[in-house]
Length: 389
Image 1: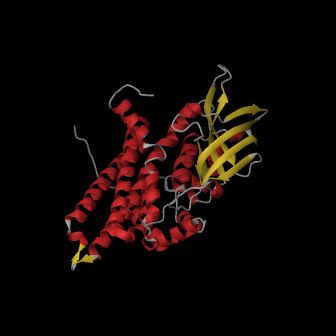
Image 2: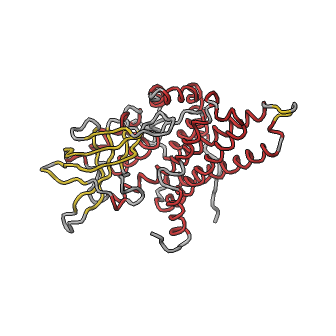
Image 3: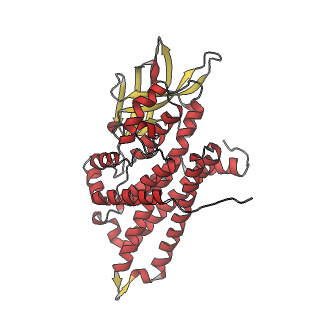
C-alpha cells in the first residue's frame, strides 16, 4: 500500500499567492500605515481584492466564489500581510462568517449572503468574546428569547473587530432549551443598523486600520431567520468557525513574520560597519536564520491544519490549527523583535515602519486564543494530561 504525501502547494495556489502579493505590494506598507494612523480603512485594497475574487476563494462556486478551501483563503491572508497590507477583517468575515453560513446556513441565508462574501461586497463581524467570557464559551451571557416568530437579543460583547466596516455581526448567544430550561449556544445574524445595538470604540495602543469595539444589545429585535441554521447545531457551528479562525490567525502572523524578516534581511545586506555589511556577522545572521527556520516550520503546520480542515477532519484540524497558531505567533514576535534589533535606532523610527509592527505581532500571542489556552489544549488532547481548569 502506498500513501502519497506532498509538502508543496499546487501551482494554482502558488500563482494565487504571487498575484495577491503583487496587489498588496502595489498599495504597500506605507499606504497601510497612513490609513491606520489617520483613522482610515483599507477600503480601496479590500474592494480591489474583492473584484479580483481573492476574498471569495473559499466561497462555493454556485454562489460566485472560487470553490476553494480555507487553505486558499489563508494563503491570500498571508500574502497580504507579507506585502505590508494586513486586513484583520479577512480573518473574520470570509473565514469565520462565510464558512459558518456555507456549512450551516439555511438555503435562504446562503442565497442572501454568500454572493456578497464572494465579491467582498459583504463584510460581517464575529462576536463571541464577552467581558467575563473569553476562551470559556460556557460563560456567555448574551441571550436570545423567542418573541412570536422572531427573537429579542440582550447582552454585551467586547474586542469585536471591524464593526464600523461591517454590514452585520454574527453573534454567538444563548437561548433556552425548551426541554431542559438550560441555556444552549446559538448563532444569530444581526445587522449593524439594528435598533438597540450600540457599538463603542475601544481605544487601543495599536497602529491598525481595523478598529475594536464593545457591543451592547438592548432588546435587539430580530426576525426568525436571523438564527443561523438549526437551533440544536450551534456547538458544531461554533467550532466550524473557530478552526478557520486559528488557521487564518496563523497565516496573519506568518505574513507579519515574513515582512519583518524581509525588512531585516535587506537592511543587513546594505548597512555597513567598517566597510562590512552587518549581515556578515553571525550575531546578526544567525538570529535571522533561526527565524527563517521557525517561519517555514510554522507554515508547514498551517498548511497541514488547512488540509485537514478542507478534508472534513474537524477534530484533526483542531489540534493542528492550535499548534499552527501558536508556532506562527511565536515566530512573528521573534521576527519583529529581531528586525528592530537589526535596524538599531532605525528600528523604532517611523520611517521604517517596524515600531508599529511590535504590537501587531504581539496580538497573535493573545488572539484569537491565548498561547496558554493552546498549551492547555495540547496538554489535554495531544498528551492526555489531566485538565487543569
